[in-house]
Amino acid sequence: MENLDNPNPEPQSFINLDKKEDQFQSRIDMIELRTSLEKVKSEIAKVIVGQESMIEHLLAALLSNGHVLIEGVPGVAKTITAKLLAKTIDVGFSRIQFTPDLMPSDILGTSVFSVKNSEFEFKKGPIFSNFILIDEINRSPAKTQAALFEVMEERQITMDGTRYIMEEPFLVVATQNPIEHEGTYRLPEAQLDRFLFKINVGYPNLDQEIAIIRNQHESKQEDKTDVVRKVITAQQLKNYQHLVKEIIVEAQLMEYIAKIIINTRENQFLYLGASPRASLALLTASKAFAALRGRDFVTPEDIKEASYAVLRHRVIVSPEREMEGLTADEIIRQILEGIEIPR
Figure 1 (cartoon, rainbow, N blue to C red):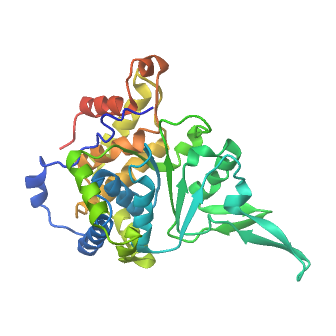
Figure 2: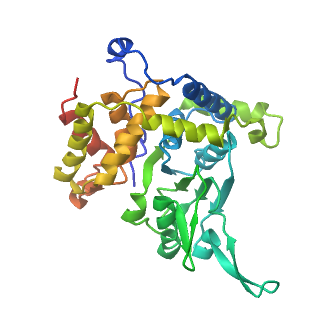
Figure 3: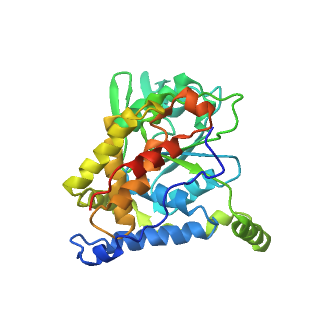
């Protein structure tokens, strides 16, 4: 179980490079991208109070074209935030509620015999959409979870020897409860590794709790999500994803990423370190955070900000240290503090 006392240790802002950044002139036009994402934030803020870190990471995942696992106790707006984000983008949306009796065919689809054609026809399942929300992903057994392996990694499905390519953009956002163990199944490491981010969501503070209560009291609408409108088209999102790939990363920052990953493999407190897939995920996520800040180049602070969500589900704390209460986030923080920041 993650430490919920401080579930979001990611740095929220960095100022030590502000003067240096002013010396650079943006070589890639990031104005439209940043303006559109600010509109998305504004739409979500009509309903959601706080949870800035979760929203920022969801937007970074969108720009990175990567999947997200959101973990938090019930009632902290995991599901509704994902639904609201989907509403701001003009793409297909599908929600799948995972249950213990859910079968792979309930997700992917199945072949049905057609009397009219006297042959089997493939009926597509709910996974055939653009934005997929999987609620309580750890409530289904391994057989059902394994159905997601191919579609999450390769964005395709193979059924009866036929390959079906998923329409872009394609994003899976899954939620799970960290404290409930009865009737749940632990996600295999291979599936966890397919998520770009694992976002830990904590409780709101006092001011945010008051604002939530006040908003509910003053609301006159039965469905508050109706106020959220679409602000980004599918083509715009694909353009932004392509733009993020063009963001500049200096050679010393690539080395910095490699040192972080290597340190997870050599750390005495970790039973399992991060794989090369984590290196690529950290590179991609760092570009996305740079884009969120309106920059066309990555800084060490972008890498630090992305490190927790990219690595926390890809490393395993040794049993001895876990019994002592040491968490993956604390070990990642120690690793980041122990590596010299390139300048």
